[in-house]
Amino acid sequence: MKSINYWLMKTEPSAFSIDDLAQKGFTEWDGVRNFQVRNMLRDEMQEGDLALLYHSSIKPPGVAGVCRVCSEARPDPTQWDESSQYYDKKASPDKPIWFLVEVEFVEKFSHLVALNELKKHPQLQHMHILRKGNRLSITSVTHTEFTFICSLAHQERPSDKELIKQRS
DNA sequence: GCCAACGTTGGC
DNA sequence: GCCAACGTTGGC
Image 1 (tube, rainbow, N blue to C red):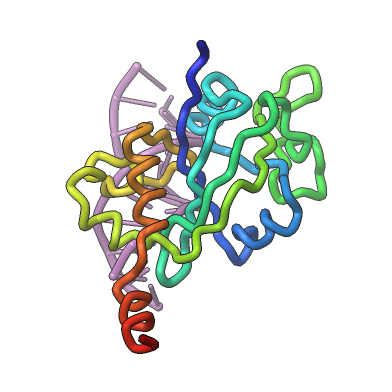
Image 2 (cartoon, chains in turn orange, purple, cyan):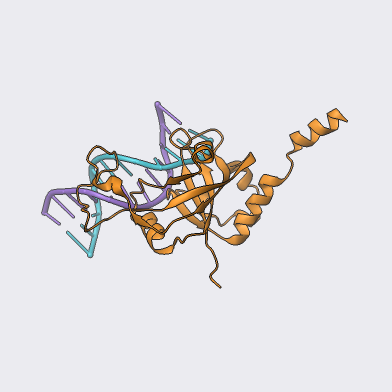
């Protein structure tokens, strides 16, 4: 039996957010221009893998939901498009440098699991995203980290409990 | 807006 | 192949 891998994929919600993904249903994850991330995309990601969608460069940053890899890796066409900000003159159609996968919407968390929340849990201390100077837009997470973060997302927040208490 | 961290580039 | 300079990322 082939087991799936788990990932964390960063996006700036001002450019592309979990709501955009929810609305479109799926998207091509193009524009990756880092060799380490390219290698993971091309060599390690497989159809069916699950990923935490992380919102960066926003207050507060954090995990906004879940998506699923729904294609094999294939060449990223923006590398040949001179009008694209991702154009790379070193790439040619017979020698692609950059790759993409498609991801599809799975879930938007009812509340963001914020970065400072992730930092509170010793179970998550080894996550790439919590390491100083981490700049990779895609990193691997363990199955344990993935399910733990999903469970945080599905927990009631104290403020929710207070609201319920106030109502009753 | 600052700045630490780190990947990339290019001269040698 | 080294390494300084530069550019980018991203939290704060």
